[in-house]
Image (tube, rainbow, N blue to C red; front, side, top):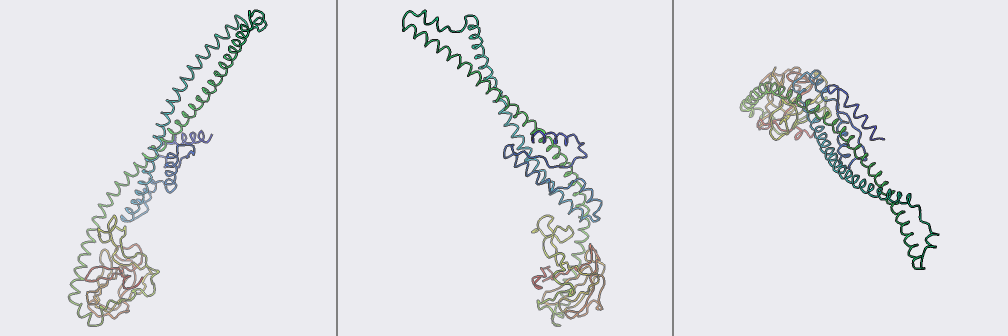
Length: 408
């Protein structure tokens, strides 16, 4: 009954126009072959995590304003679709294999029915002949057998022969009954097998329809991803050009101020937290590999091979920022990526970067700033999605994980 109900539900799903369908869970019948049932369970587990990918993609393109946000959201959708498509293909393969196996059993069952029908026909013909004989000659007259026997041995032979005829008739009737029961049972099995094939075919059609829809959505998402990648590539080239300019500036300033900064006590390798009012709990993005497309390229990171070169510390807007170590300050206002930025040279190859500032403190470029003095205020300038400080520690102009020195 469950299998019939499942078939009705599946047929109803198939009737819905394809444009209105989303991938839906299907009824997994425990009576299916174990591998088909498990593939169905795996498929439903993936569907359970899915929201309509097509609608989700539309929401991404309309509700997320930045190309980077869109492409990251699209990558999540594409990964989900990849998992769903793999589960759908696995279920289709298992279902088709089960259909092929049951088709083979149906052919054997049909052959068994043909054989049983032939045997029943032969035995039925024998029984008909026997009944016609009895009808023409009547049943065995045991009194006549006794009276007409010439000897005792003749009598015994007649009695044994009559018993054998009667036993043969009973066996013939019993055999016909057994064969008829076997025929009915085999015929019922054939009906069950055909019903199971019909239900599996409906499941196969429903899964194939969902697969085709997911593949179409995946194709559209990949096209959109390529467009966004092209757009981000242009933005990334601009940012890389600016990064190189900043790196060159840091290298130039290091040559100019490194010795002087060390003379004033900087460059010891000891740093303090740059935003005292908002400590470790305010770290919104650590140092390391990220999926943010506009960060620095690093081939050792997984796709899209980007690394966040510092710490993002998200405190209240205009939270004071202090110098992490004594050094010589250089103001760099209005950059594309870092926005209002500060670079400090500390000596012995150490430098620090402070980005996205709302404004600067009282110091100007080229001045010596003692450790812990206010140099700026947290903001959201440049390519920033909200107030935070981007803080870097560099050694010989190479960004390192600030937590190595800060203990976060």
